[in-house]
Every structure is written in structure tokens, then in C-alpha cells.
Image 1 (cartoon, rainbow, N blue to C red):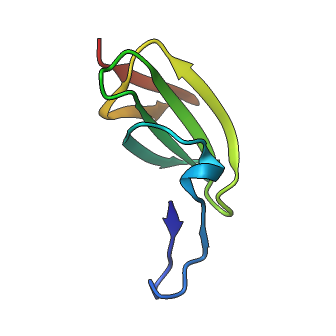
Image 2 (tube, helix red, strand yellow):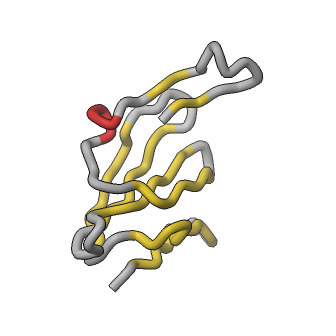
Image 3 (cartoon, one colour):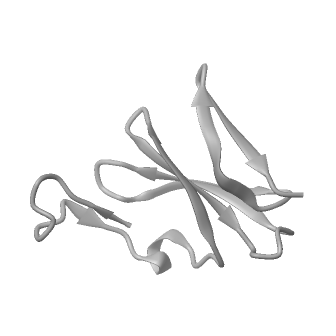
Length: 88
């Protein structure tokens, strides 16, 4: 994950897959309230996750397991809550 401003040659920060926790597949990303939310899971759909990353520095803030893989583009924030649509 790399954050850039205007010059892509000089990233603001980057976070490796190792720093975020090695996952089989990422398929959803959104920005809300100064945080990035990543969603994904196993390719067979049996395990899922959402991870919350600080948008200003790339630090992993939280991670939550889901009962199935987060659907492609299947996460949303509304009313102060995070919603995740899962493949099952």
C-alpha cells in the first residue's frame, strides 16, 4: 500500500504486505475519517477480513475477521459504522 500526493516518485508513506499481515487476497478499499479500510480474504471465500489503516502514516490500527471473504468493492461507511458485504 503506497500513499502519494502529487509526485508518485516521492511517496508520502508505504506499508508492506508483511506490515499489514499477509493475506491471500485484497479486493476492497475505502477512505473515511482519516482511515483506510481494506477488505478481502481467501480466494475460496471461506475466510474474510477487514483491516483499518491510519491514512496519514500507514500504521495498521485494527483487523477483524469476517465469516467469508469481503466482496469486491463490498465495504462502506455510513453513520459512523462499517458495513461489509461478504461472499458466501
